[in-house]
Length: 76
Image 1 (tube, rainbow, N blue to C red):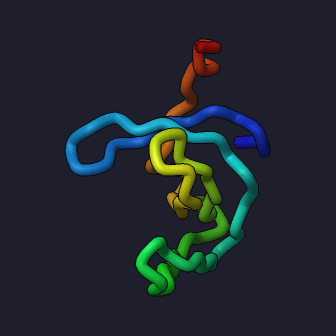
Image 2 (cartoon, rainbow, N blue to C red):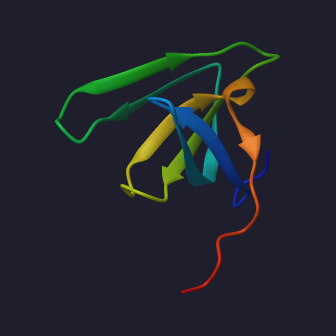
Image 3 (cartoon, rainbow, N blue to C red):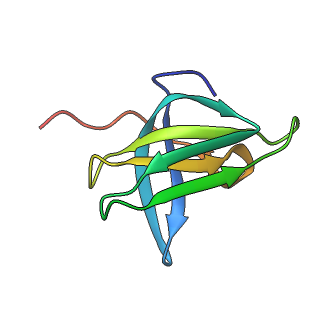
């Protein structure tokens, strides 16, 4: 998945969308909205992907296997 690709994933039983902002490699960390640090660990075959959520605008870390390609968002 390339930078700028639109992707989707399931969060709390609902489909969520976002845009890939980069690859975190095998290990990546990000500060959460509440100030805590979230760290995700991937593998060579299933790296961590950084995403900007369409809903919250927050950075999300997901393994590539958790993501699906999504169509581009409709312009409002």
